[in-house]
Image (cartoon, rainbow, N blue to C red; front, side, top):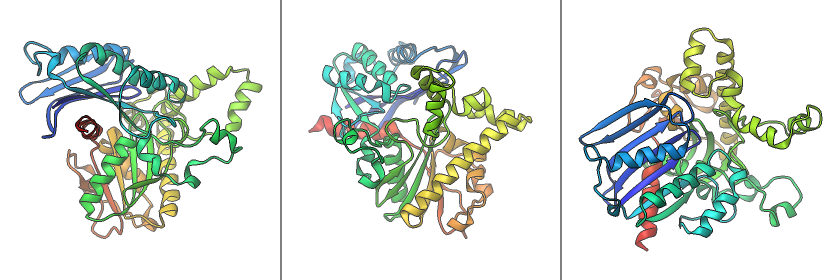
Length: 394
């Protein structure tokens, strides 16, 4: 079964064509920096590879570009869209409606749309991917895999807010958790690597960032909440913020609520602190003496450390921490800064190992470190393919 996986992030699209159940990756690629003039597109097969820098203003144009490459006469990997039996879509917010992988119907699409306000950077892009895929791969089954599903194991003490009970029972206001496909994948890989069920903290660092406490393979706490804006500092999202700031912006500064939402979702985080949303640009500027960029990096690291400490308390110790996603896998600087002065938790980084770049799961801790420090490349696309295949085979 040939399955196209579409993973639309807030500023990126990852895609793979996977043969199941062999798990052979026929084609893979990515578009990042969507919305910038310097969007980067990659496309790779066993025989060909392509990389372009070009302006891709939105997800729709990006997805159309990907579909053309798959069908290209010279470097394409399919001759007809009829070869594709299923398309798996990462959908960020499933709310209270979805805790499992589902076949996409008009009703499902409407429910995804109803959740736009809770995930304004993601669910619209996810739905766009579904709509374009329905046009391009019209004979394929369209399947949604929800980021919120993995976190359904969080206990009530973790997912409830201290607000009137009716807001939960009637309006379903609670913490749902996100990046679940990634956290599930890397935590399971880590358990296999460590050869035991463990107390693990998974740290997903990309344009969106989150951290999860995982005990015996289950999510028991997570940094994001009702929507994917809480917790760690992100590319354009503020992460944790005092709710009083929102009231002050509205009541004293004269902001409309829609404007506050735009500020906190699209103009804050690293972008608000530095004028840049991409960590590569921020790190380069910091190295050249930009004080705002240096401060932003320190704030980012400080926030991660706070969550590691709190989750170590929740787990009653840690066996391993995991770095994953674009920043977590590639930024030796961030990993080193996060692990600095963490000996009290049994974490001791090997700086030489930390500098090694690899696509494999690896330890970057010293031999004396009581807890493991792992870099685990995430593969949300393969995890989605597994779930799509399982659903289609029922």
